[in-house]
Length: 147
Image 1 (cartoon, one colour):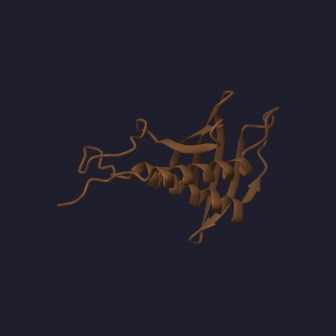
Image 2: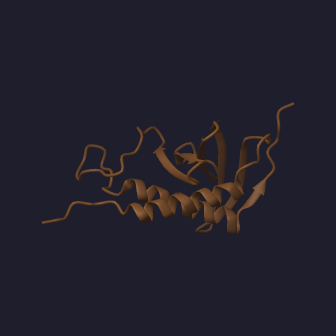
């Protein structure tokens, strides 16, 4: 019999704290344009990673991270993650992916949407990989401001 998935909260918190630190290096400072773009090479393909500060409050912020594959194809949907930054706890976690409801910490399996039991930690690890790519190999693009 397969054992029920139990999340490792210590690991999950460490991943979220590391992602917060990475995002602090990549996001624009207060008062700057709320969008940063990085061109990254991923498996011999060029990908544009866009970080957009969607909401900012005293203790939390929301950031939308979008991957745009180059050359752009209308047939390939760009992955998008919504990330919540908790400034008082110094943590950042993926709260949902494109067109999904907020993620649960654990999913029974099988389920209607075919989420993995550990979907949330997998998306937070995925976020960390992309943030590392932007930090280590990304080329920041200048964002043209509207006049």
